[in-house]
Length: 470
Image (cartoon, rainbow, N blue to C red):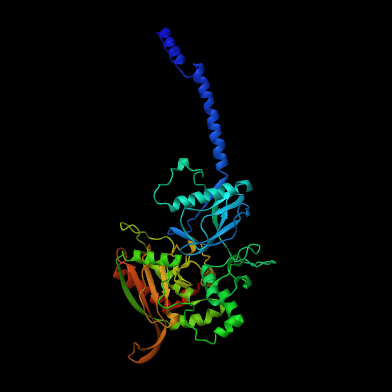
C-alpha cells in the first residue's frame, strides 16, 4: 500500500506543471507580462482624479465656487486647490498628494455630483499633456449619449483614489503685495453672489479687498466698494429697491442651499405634524436680559437655555423618528436656531445647551452666527440639532408656524414680546409683556399632552428665570 501510495504521488508530481519544460517556460513568461502590467499601472497611477467631496450627509452635488489654483500650478500635499459650495457652506478642498494641477474638468460655477471627477492631478510636469488629453477624452465621451462608458478595468485612470480632502477654512488675515483674494494676481477668489453683484454694480473686483475666509471677496465687500465709488454715489440718488439687482419677471434657478432647503421642505410633507400654541409672560426674562446683556449675553442664548432646561424634563419632545418604525431618545440636547443668510437658511447648533452656562452659550452663538454668514460652518455645527428654534420676534411678528425639519421631533416658533393688557388674579387690569410660541411636532412620537406639559415647564422657567444664569 505504501508503494502504491508513493507511485500515486509520483504520478501526480509527473503530471504537474513543474515537469514539462515548455510549460515551465510559458509560466516564466507570465511574470514579465504581470510586471509590464504593474509598471503600466504605476505609470497610470501618476495621473489621479480629484473628486467632488461629500461635505454633508445630505449633499448629492456641489458647486465649484472658485479654483484656488490654475492649470499647470505645482501642488504640495495639504495645499488648498478648490473652494466647493455645498448645500450649507463653502469649504476649501486640499490635495492628498504632491503634483501638478493638470486639467480642470469642472469650471467655476459648474455643478458636479458627489464622487465625480472635477480635475486631474499629474505627478510630474511631463504628464500634464497626457492628463489634458485624457480630460478631453472624458469630456467628449460624457457628451455623447450613445456609447456606454467603458468598464473600470479598461480605463487608463486607476480605480478611484481619494486625492483631496475637505479642510476647515477659518478667516485669515492676509498681508501680501498682491491682492489677498487672488493667487499671485492670477485669479480673484470671490463668492458667486459677490461676482454677480459686482457685475450688477459695475465694481472691479481686482480693486476690492476681501474680508471673507482666506481673503475671499463676499457680497458685503462689493457693496462697500460700490458705496465708496463715484458711480455708486450717483446711483444712490435713484430709488433703491429692497432687493438690488432683481429683475421683475425673471426666472432664477435655485442656489445649492435653496435646493437643499426645498428638498427638506418637501420631505417634511411626509411627516404627520400638529401644532400647539402657548402664551408666556416675559417681564422677568426681559429684566434678566437687560441686567446681563452688557456681559455679552444674547436673547437667543437665553431662549435656547430655557428651552434646553425644559427639554431635560420632557425627553420625549427631544426625541426623533427617522425610519417610521422606531424613535430615539437623544442623549444630548442640541438646540438648532434658524438663521437667515444670503441666499438661504441655516440652523447653527448650540451643543449640550442644558449643560453649558449662559455666558459660554452666548459666546458660542456669536461665533456660530459669524461662521454661518461666512458659510464656514462644519457639518457637525449645523446638522446635529435635536430641537429647533425659529425666532421672528425681532421683526415684530407676533405669531407664526414653523415647518418641522426632517429627522427632528419638534420646532418652536417664537414671536415678539409685546405689552399686553391682562387681568390679574385679584380681578384687576394690568399690563404685562407676553410672547406667543407655537410648537410643531411629529405626531408619530409626540402627542398633545407631551407638548402641553413641555410648554407649561418652559413658561415656568421663563417667568422665573433664576436657573438660566447657573
